[in-house]
Length: 180
Image 1 (cartoon, rainbow, N blue to C red):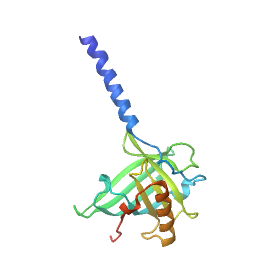
Image 2 (spheres, rainbow, N blue to C red):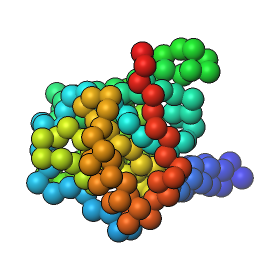
Image 3 (tube, helix red, strand yellow):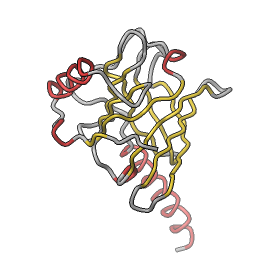
Image 4 (cartoon, helix red, strand yellow):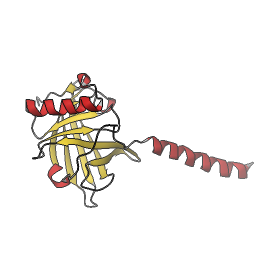
């Protein structure tokens, strides 16, 4: 019996681990395409979250910003910060991003809780890297980012139209306040 347990328990844990790892999606929604000829160095720096869908990790948050910087090993450090207006406290989460394929394609995977990775796909960006539309792995995740706390109406319209064509319900976007 002990021999049976020595075999079954590790194999079961291994299978469970594979199931969990495979459940981590680093895909891109159907109809979306990551930006090509992407310049990761130009993307680094501070971004303000202009809009997003509601999900538990950012629930009740405003003044949300992300700062991206290069790690010595070539990965990207992701430093997210936001103010929880219900609990009246700042929250910070630091993670890591890696390119899924080439560094010139804006398809990344990001992790705040290894070994769980999620898709981070820049699907639209202006020529000066001031405004970005970012899709997650599914239609549940979408972000509009800006280098400042505001976004021009022309960029807003462009991003919303693109998101709708992909299948996002943009009426559900939360428009993030920046007042602190």
